[in-house]
Length: 477
Image (tube, rainbow, N blue to C red; front, side):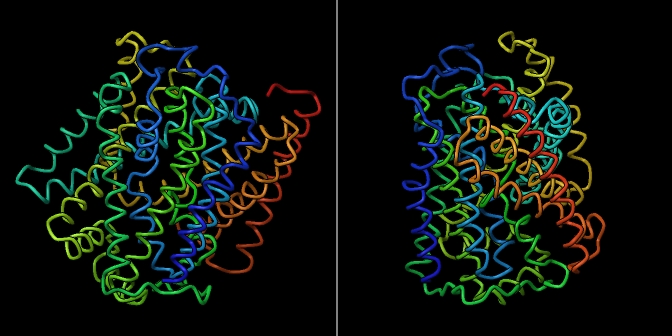
């Protein structure tokens, strides 16, 4: 319990201390023009209250990530607390904050456009292919997941739920941001926080014991094939760092009314998500009687994190728990799914410079995207999720290098705050390719890690040469 409490206190303190530092590094200007005023269109660019944007951002970036990912990560033991806390502060919150600020200062542009500006046209073209595919993977995955759960809980057939979810996604994607997202999401965002607070109460007042961090050993039941480095860093994504977050930030950058809102909306939402992940990792270990008990239960139940959420919630909180479980495993993925499709629409619209005020233009962009997304929903779920997890973290690598370039162009002495995480995550994603049987499958051998290091050195060197060259020629900030 001591480890958990220390990590929780560090996360809360980081909002004020590290968040304040990053705000000074970014030189946030309360009086600066923002896209919601200069580019108002009544659809995607429009001012919303700060509290509403915060709750929308929290729900957008969360989905099931800080819950499912935290439970899967808890199988490694209390070392998961360390990654959630340090990763969430030094990587995730910094990543989300600067990605949001960069979009805010570039007219709310989507991630491929800002990547292109700071890392070059080649990276822009690459991200214009990769990021929309990632968004459609998220959308496809989050058609399947809630539909299966709802079908198991009702007499309505699975395919009917698939149709209902798809129709909802389509309507939410093309409607103005204040109509559905702006009204419903804050409610579900508040419910996500309430769910976490209820679990925190279970930890504090229930007859449970949270394990302490007294070793960095891998406690996973399949430790030989799932080493901490790099697999834990891929398993716990949204609770520590996630490239998907940077695709969602432009949606809210287009609704902010002041640059000074960046800390609570971008940094604060990520810190909140890390707290949620920390709570769920703790309660998962405590509820099943320790890490060994959690691993045993996961083995017996097909490694089903969703079932674990339902079991924990219903057992500890009764009827209220079942409602909270429903919100966690159904509402959260649905809300991430529709904003994934919305983000894909905005990325394509930015690429084509396609005005999104006329509804027919929104339909022209959205219909092909939904055709692909619906097709993805019928591909084997395990295959989609397996590669989504890695590609999500690979996207965070691109974003971290973009942030590094932005800081270096500003000649900021704090550019190392992004450079070090960029190199670490480059190594995590590179080594995973060699270690994991999803790719080359060499296992956790020395040679796999050496190869990962070599790829990291090459990629980092090439990107730094590009960035330094741009700084010397005085590229635009």
